Amino acid sequence: MVVQAYILVQTAVGKAGEVARAIGAVDGVVRSEDVTGPYDVIVRAEAASVDALGQLVLAHVQAIPGITRTVTCPVVHM
Image (cartoon, rainbow, N blue to C red; front, side):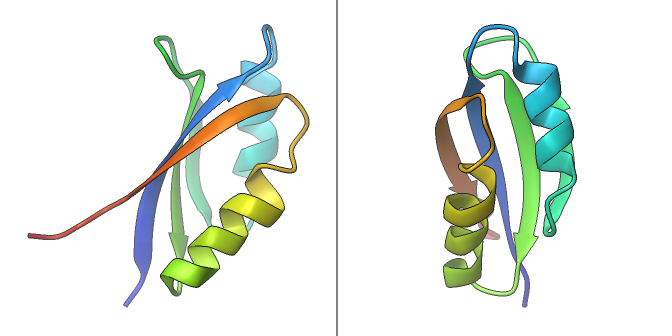
């Protein structure tokens, strides 16, 4: 079973487009779009497990220059 999540990203001023493109190139990222509102980029990601999702966010997404904050929202099926 694949774990899916939305990652809400805040960026430094003027960096949303650049960050969205960089995140889009990360393995496990299904979609990355710059948006308006309280977050600058919204990402849809998939991983094999919750641990793998954590590694994706911590080691790859948060390492991208220009990111100031992330919030990870795992998808649940009720």
